[in-house]
Length: 56
Image 1 (cartoon, rainbow, N blue to C red):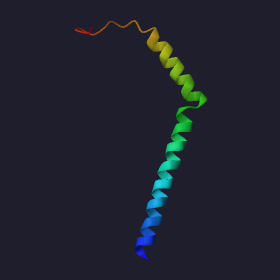
Image 2 (image 1 turned 180 degrees about the horizontal axis):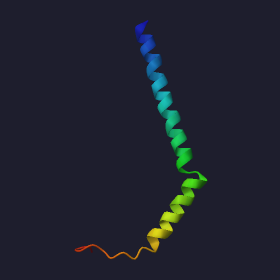
Image 3 (image 1 turned 120 degrees about the vertical axis):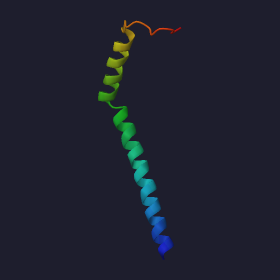
Image 4 (image 1 turned 90 degrees about the horizontal axis):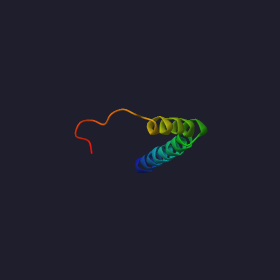
């Protein structure tokens, strides 16, 4: 009986991890995340800071 309880707990943990992965995927591809990526891309494209010494 203990083994069955452990199996249920393990499946609950695995299912919980799966739900968290899906939620993270939804949050990281939402409108806000895409807007942030666009702003950062524009900022990096116009970055005029000098290259560090020895950079190729």
